[in-house]
Image 1 (tube, one colour):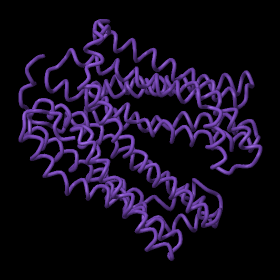
Image 2 (cartoon, one colour):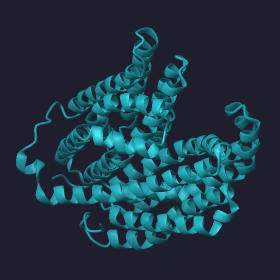
Image 3 (cartoon, one colour):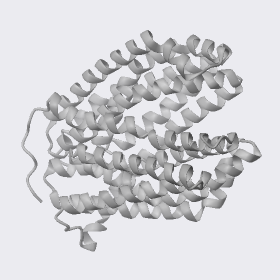
Image 4 (cartoon, helix red, strand yellow):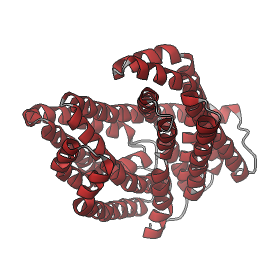
Length: 448
């Protein structure tokens, strides 16, 4: 074990050395879905397009549920970096790969019942469900690869190697785009081609990630069994990952509930919500990039037992979060109506989207604490507290929806904004006590 890194003031340049590439990566991530949708759309069969759309949503939710493989890896890697435990970095990577392989294998083995259950809940037509099942049963083979890429991404970000992480993600997206175009538009493999392209892209991304990891470790990836399966470290990893998974599941529950209730409000309201959800996605790209910076900088300061750097990182991430949120809100306020016009040709959908536009203008401002403190809590592995606060925020969201449901779709949007505020507000209120508790002791693993 090496001595912890010396204390140093966290700077804006350090924040954006991580946040900048993360923002660019976030902007490129939807390309996989967009390319698949565009290529299948060119075939002119609405059921195939619907099948890709439905299956893509399912994979987004499945993989998002296991995003702890990225977040947990960022935290453990950053903390080991801060503590000077360079030998532990290789163990963290290999442990992550083992967990990703196990989860991915289970998903592949359960693919038939999983596809039947999930597609039944989506309620698509027979043609759409059949197309979605074709896509699902091929793309599910990418599960161990995609989850392995989460581990590589987290491992690189945890060491503040954000440009390498960005390069890996962009490579995955470019290979996916090229393979989709070839398999769907040139070789005419249809929906199976789109799914196969996603598998090829994830495989190529993981191969690149392993090469990068190999070069960074001088190909010393072999780990002693006793080190790899150190009981204390394994239990801590499993505990933190379990709590992050529960936290993520509660977040997914909010979005699934929001989508389901929007569907009950009618086709026009559902379409308007879908249009406005793209606005939320845009703001999330920027705020999530800053959350990535919080994960790494807070994790490293936590591992180094450096309270000053930890608090400084939190302050900078929150300040810049509000800066970006104000900018995004201003863009939505000024150009929102014009953006809505370009996204839909339906007069009724346009009218409803403009009516609910104020909700998405305020969303980024209410989301600053939610994103920033998620990053802080992950970096410090305050996973148990984050889990409990997220479950409480879910309960507050459902309570708000019950109180506001008489207002229809406007009440649904109001409840969503309450969730943003509750999620970030609860974490902000709990933060001072956790900060005091964490830096009162020399043992980094004590606070949950």
